[in-house]
Length: 169
Image (tube, rainbow, N blue to C red; front, side, top):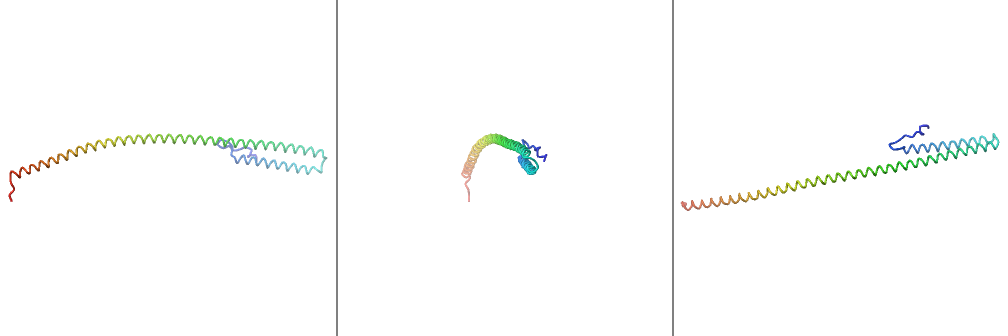
C-alpha cells in the first residue's frame, strides 16, 4: 500500500477519493496494529512476569495513542484541505460567472448599438422614400393635369371642327 502514501494530484489539489482511501488505510493499519498488540499481550500473559507485561502494555497503549493522534491530525488536515479546495472552487465558479455576465452585458450593448444604427438607417431610408413618394405624387398630379388639359383641348378642337363642318347624315 505504499502507493497510497503518494497522493495523485488533481488540477488544484488532491483527489477526494484518494484522501478517503488513505484515511481508511490508516484506520485499518491502526486497527491491525491494535489487534497485533492485543494478540501479543494475550500470548505474553502466560510467559512472563506482570512487570514485563505491564511494560509491553504501556508501550502498546502509548503506540496506540501516538497512532490515534497521527490519525486525528491527518483527518483534520484532510478535512481542512477539502474545505479549502471547495472554497477555492466556489470562488473560481463565482469569478467565471461574473466574467460570463460581463461578456453577455457587453454583447447586449453591442447588439443594442447595432440595432440603433440599423434603426437610424431605416428611418433615413424611410425619409428618402417619403420624399420620393411626394415627388412622384407631384409629378402624377402634373401628368393628370396635362392629360386633363389635353382632353379639354381635344374636346375644344372637336367642337371647333364640328362647328366648321356640320355633320351630314
